Length: 177
Image (tube, rainbow, N blue to C red; front, side, top):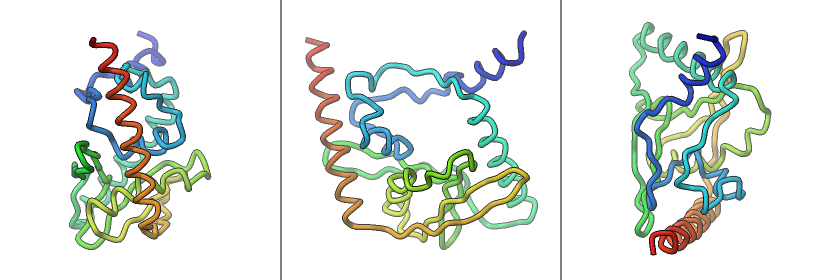
């Protein structure tokens, strides 16, 4: 087997995260809010082609997890939380949850940290803890950027997510009729 195919298949392996109408992921908020995720395509399976970037991020996050565990730091990883907004659920899954803070980690491929504010806002709302963007880089390092919550941004997220949800419902009710 070719290594490229192996890596592609690994990243695109079915992990049981089927999209459902009314259930949305905080990690997709930026794409939803800025129209990269289209209501008509929301339920379609999509493949990830940039597996090298994904795997680099996973590998550095795994190493950070190993370090925290080895150094006996008290934390939980990948805690799944849910926020109810009207008749929808926003699923939030911070990478690292500590007693007084949460970290959402991203590898430093892009310097557009602003696009993560939607996910960070949702993580803050779900945990009510200080929230940080952990920037993982190579050679291995972690820089923490503190996120400052915003009531205005939270309102925008709820309004735009609900509008997206209504369009997804409308499109899919037409398809099933």
